[in-house]
Each structure stands twice: as C-alpha cells, then as structure tokens.
Image 1 (cartoon, rainbow, N blue to C red):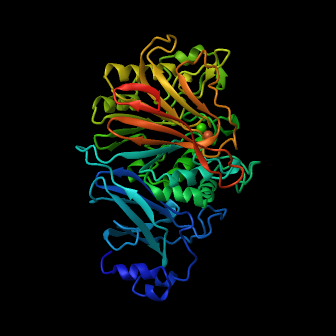
Image 2: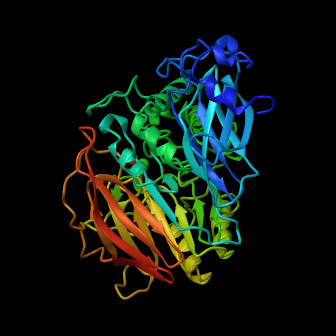
Image 3: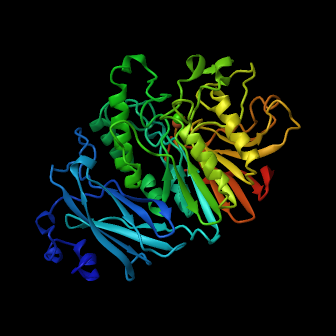
Length: 509
Ligand code: FE
Ligand code: CA
C-alpha cells in the first residue's frame, strides 16, 4: 500500500476523519460494504486468492447489493499476526460492477507452508479478518494438515451450525463439494429464501448474497482457505451438461447456466484462470499440497452425458455404455478431463491423491438392484476407466471425496464390486449435508449392507468430515449435529476411521 502507513489503515476503519489521506474519503460515511464477509482459496506455495464482495444492502432485487454503477477501489493487507503489526503484503484492486463488485486478489511472493491473516478496506470501512495459509513447497511434505470437507448447505432447510462447528475445529483447508446454494423458491423450513426460483443473473447474485450474510458461513470462510467445486443446485437440480431437469427450461437453459456459472465465480475465492466464459467455466484443476497431497478438483456436471434411462433409481443397461462419460462431452472419442485426471495421477508427486468431486462414486445397489443414475453408477464405464487408472498406474492412495447425497458414507472402492474377495483399490469419503434435509435421524445401519459389503459407515445426521492428514495416515472423523432446525447444536463424532499409507480402505480408528 504505497504511501499509506499501517497506522492510517488501522485507524481508517474507526471513523471518517482518519481516512482523509485516502481517495475514498468522499464515501467514508457510506454504509458498511463488507456484509458478505471475506474468504480465501486456491492455496499455492507462494500465495492464495483473497475474496470479498461489496454489498451494503445484500438483498436488493437487482442483485447488486446496494452498490452504484461506479467501480470501487479496494485495499488489501496480509500479515503474519491478526493485529496486523507485521504486514507482509499489501495492494489495491478494483471492485467492478460487471463482477458484482467482487474482488479476487491473487497474492504471490509469500513464504510456503505458513499462516497469514488478511483484511480489506473500501469506502472508509475495514472488513473482518480472515486466516489463511500457503501450501508447502512442492519438494516438502510440510506440516500436518487438517482438511475439512462439506457440501449441501440449504439455507431454507436449517441453520448453518455445522459450518460454525467446522470453523471451531480450526482446519487448515476446507473443501466445499457442491450445493453451496439452492436454486428453489422460499422453501418450507425454519428460514426462507428471498424471492422465487432463481433464473437470471440478478437472482443468482442475490441468492449468494443472502447465503453469505450468515455468520456461521462467514466463520467457516474466515478460518482457512477453501477449494470449491459446484454441483447441480448452483444451477438447477440434476442438470446434465446443457440438458435441464425441467424441459420447460430448454429454450433458456444455456443462458440460465451461463448466469449461474458467472455468479458462482463472482462469489467464490477462485483464480482468474477459473473465470466464466461465454459458454462455460473452466473449473477442473489440480492443487498441490507439497509432497503430502494432491487435490484433483473435478467437474462432473458441466460436460456429462444426460442421465441414463430418464434419471432416478433404475436398473439400466445404458449406464454401461462406453460412449457416455460423467467427466466429458465426447468429441471424436477424446475425453479431455478424464485424460487430464489420469495424467495427473500418474505424476505421483504426493503421498495422497484426493479426488474432490460431487456425486457418489462407489457402486451402491438398492434392495431391488437399482442404482442412482445421477451418480457414477449411472456412468459405470467412466468409473471403470478411473478405477483401472488407479490400478494400472500404481496409485498408492487414491481417496475420492464426495457430497450430494445428504448423508455420510465411508466406502471401500473395489476392483470388482460383484466379487466380495476382490481387492480394495481406493477409498471414498462422502460428507453429509451442512443443512439440506433438515435434522435427519440417528439411524446408522448401512442400508442394503448384504448387496453393498464395501460400504462401511453411514450416518443420516447433518455435519461435515474432519480429516487430519499426515504422511502415514488420513484419519477421518464423521462430525454430526443433532439439530439444524434450531440454531447452535453441539457437535459430536459419529464414527472415526483411519486410512493407512499404502493400504486403501477404511480401518476402524
Ligand atoms: Fe444437495
Ligand atoms: Ca447435488
């Protein structure tokens, strides 16, 4: 922050008078613009993305949060302490109206594997302080890492207590695996969406703004950097590529999806590299965490073939078709995302290979032999190719991370699901919802266990998963809360497992 002392920066948040040296002086009496909180994401060995979005009136129906059309200068600071006595990086950026006055600052030049604090200033106001960290150098294992994972945070179904409990666990990295917002109308739960089903850019922007006013969600963003991928509800339930769920949407769906992707990027701590284009959003990417872990973040919605046999639970031959992929729209037989994943796994740069993705990966049969056409059971050739890739490339520790189903599962991945004696070749952790589905119940019996002996854990409560990761093991704690229809339930651990280095599958902790 050239020419601006730290003291002025700090005092500037306390009143208009001390902001006189700043160009923002005229706006010092403006309302507080940081009501959507702050966030960080995409940690690298030398930096991280810092995010905020200015919105003094978050629920305005134009989706612009009470901002005028003017661009606004936003200053940012990174320090090694939360009082900002040791500032290590500062800068200025512009919050632009055509990005809904969001900012995505890609900070570089920071030391690897270190903790930092950050904050913003705009219009004479200072934001809340967030904690973030850089990844270890590519040649280092680095410190142990607590990774927390979550999904399916339906505002209208309950309070975000699970986000608060996740923040209290002080993770070093948070994965959100989709359904960060829901697209429907008001809902019938303990609190309501503003507005009807969201269809256009203004409505998507306002929906994100409403969610981001939640203090528990803000706490979860402020505790650590996030890695995010969207699932279906950021656009529309169970859409596939450019095929909407509701055929009434056929004519407008391409425009609706583009608006949804645009609002997603505006509201997430993503890099410019992931910015929406006229036709899509380049989201699948690899984030390296030194020699400890790789996070392969997948997109199983944007390119997938339409669900087989009309979606839902089916006994469906088409689910086996080689020509259908959940990762790619096939073009002259090429599967770019799948090839990118297999090539990245083959590099073997880290002990643990996490696949951060959206929908249920392991085979799961219902009592009648049917399976869900929206998950990898509906794209069995895709799953077979990825699993064969694990085996053929000798991937030591593949762990698939999943959301979507609003229940927690812990699964062994099998070379051949029909053969109980077949080798375990990987592990899947499925996080329950933050709020979707309401309180749930205490049943923990694995459904249809006789046809699914590789499914080892099940819980129907809301919550998240906490994974302390070391070079020797990944520990998995399934964290649950008994109530989301009232705010503030305590958290407990419903089950704990260990995945040992070189030994795929879940062992009781
Ligand atoms: Fe969901
Ligand atoms: Ca979903």
